[in-house]
Image 1 (cartoon, rainbow, N blue to C red):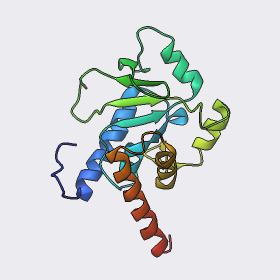
Image 2: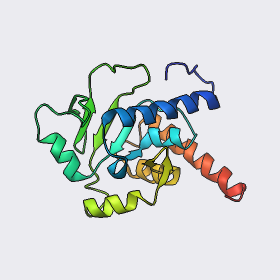
Image 3: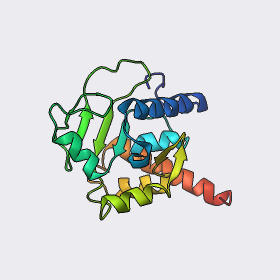
Length: 176
């Protein structure tokens, strides 16, 4: 969100607007809420911690492969995708300019490295927090993923790690 000013924390309204954009974007993909996990910075927006810059999704392998092995690559709603360059794991990303202002860039990957099977992944989805019917990775698990990520040395990831640590410490101090 370009409304943010340097060195000024985002307002609750900015975070809320970003969370609405995350959900609107996920809806726009046409992916099923029963098999789509919102993660990364977009999950932090849904948790109310910071605005999202894009939407990161994990979908079951069978859904990922149904997209990946069809040409052209596209979400169920027709959002065009391409293979993202320079990634460790396979990621599909949107590349067209969004049709609406509140639609964000999307990265989609598969849970292959985190879950034993699609069934295990879909079962686990039901245990996560929900935002307007979509499961999202809670902040403690975003932190865990970012801590073990090969990209954890990027400034944005270090900032997220600090933000989530602070949030978890506040939750603990408040008895939550």
